[in-house]
Image 1 (cartoon, rainbow, N blue to C red):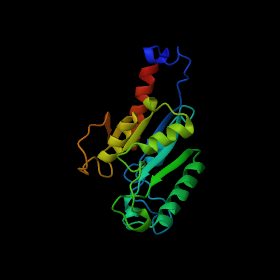
Image 2 (spheres, rainbow, N blue to C red):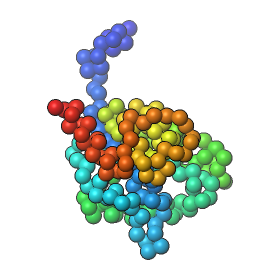
Image 3 (tube, rainbow, N blue to C red):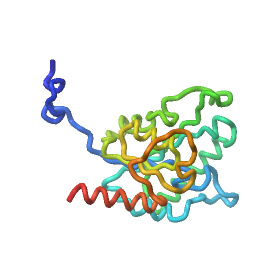
Image 4 (cartoon, helix red, strand yellow):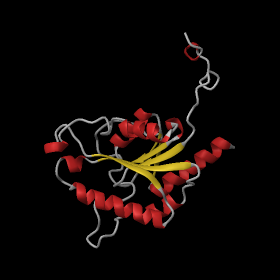
Length: 205
């Protein structure tokens, strides 16, 4: 039996604990109003969302988008239109010195159409998106946050072990898919980022 299995702490046993922190965002309902560009080609940002992203200390937090796209699986959204939105959003953010490490999306559903008809560990409320980011970017999920607007967002993130914030924009937790309590609620993304900053400041004082 190894020392770690006998209850010795991971660091004492010589196991390195990841320390990187991140914030995960659902896309529409948190950052944007809809998952496709406006007719004029602009990104349909929710009020104050871009400004909220600019307030994040990116020396502390890596930024990710994690979104389950069953609208693609059921043919309500074309994958190429979704990609155009993502490209434009990243360009907007880069111009404001906001850097997303990666966008994780899952277009699959067990009842979806054609090639999108299959189950996936990356489809919320499964925690696959967060686990993949953990492996790829060496994250400590216990020190990460996820901001969503549906109960599926909250449940997936809690299964991954992150802190969860439910914003009152988008579905505002009224999707009725699951009964789950987020760690925190916020009026919008600006309020969510303010709460994260306050929590981090308090935890380090």
